View 1 (cartoon, rainbow, N blue to C red):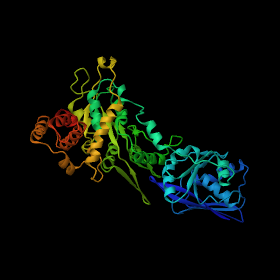
View 2: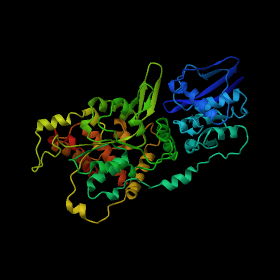
View 3: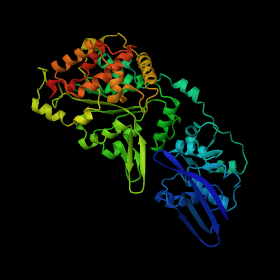
View 4: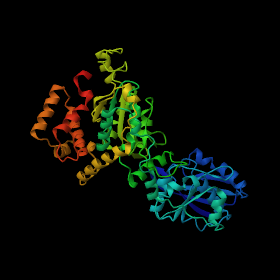
Length: 511
């Protein structure tokens, strides 16, 4: 007897429908074909125990299972439930009338309970696209799949509930996820808030500018000055994610297995902070069975690289292309996968090998040669992609001990959102440009025009501070963002003057 059950596999962040064909014939044997990996091959042991522990019969006949398309590799434990239901349907132990309407996936425990799987959101999106009525999966995955409108999602606890559903023995209500209610509840709820930060007003201002224009930023300061504390609070002032961004972010984390047993939709912008020992594959993604890396898990959020010069140079260099293209492509002999990677980079570093600024007379000094060697660990092409460099000095005792409340993140966030709204309107008809940091030379000429006095100010500053040529475009981009925060159509001299402050590494005493 032949029966078909439908499941899915995913490549990158997109899913592909898998048809599981189960045929039971006379004879003895269990044959699973269609390029299953070891986890899929081992499923027969889990299925046998789960059926027996639920008073069901594992047929003692010749069972042939094909997972089509047969030339695509099938990985993981998510097919346990699909295979078990196929065997039960082919052996006439359950009603098979609903199998063509629903996709069925889940990992089986030996007692028949269902364990959460990964990649549920892209699977549900593809199932609806292919015309399925709904999906049956573990209870812990249901909220994630329920993000899809007009699609029935049944989150069930164990194998017996799945059988009751298919046999019409019990009525189950599909889960409905109220996205708008969830959006309103989570608004302005942050794990970290700028109100906790004493002093550092100039650094907070730089972070506000970075958030407003989507600029990458580098914090330079001695240990204990608060660089990490400030970086962790950057997501709290970024504009709220749209529903499209939230679903896009959730898809990536779902494929990576980071949404199991969670609330489904990811609405807080991601903050990823890999250790400096991270490999290039872990950072950009890849592996024998490719998975998204840290830069893709930071999509629509923030990637924080603490102690930037301590990262291997090869690791930092692989970021150059994703920073420019906002996506990373991983190529293998048999396939190519593209992961989105549109993130804000915030990095921190000490100003010298000794950990302090070179002009601090109270600390051990590093020589100019040592400082230059230390800074050269970060290549110029990577620094070219960082718009703001800001010095972070230790906070004096008087500011640490005062009780004056600092500005809250939600207040800063309002200003950031207003500036982003201006940019959205400005680049409405531009392809692949949504905020100031994405401008190229053509757009800088169009949107960053200076009057004579402002141009002269920039010229004098570059000459007197000995700023490098690469600083020119960065200053114009940042000044455009500062003007947006001031709700100004034209870039003015005060905007240029402030932007010049944020190019520390381009000044003469740093080289």
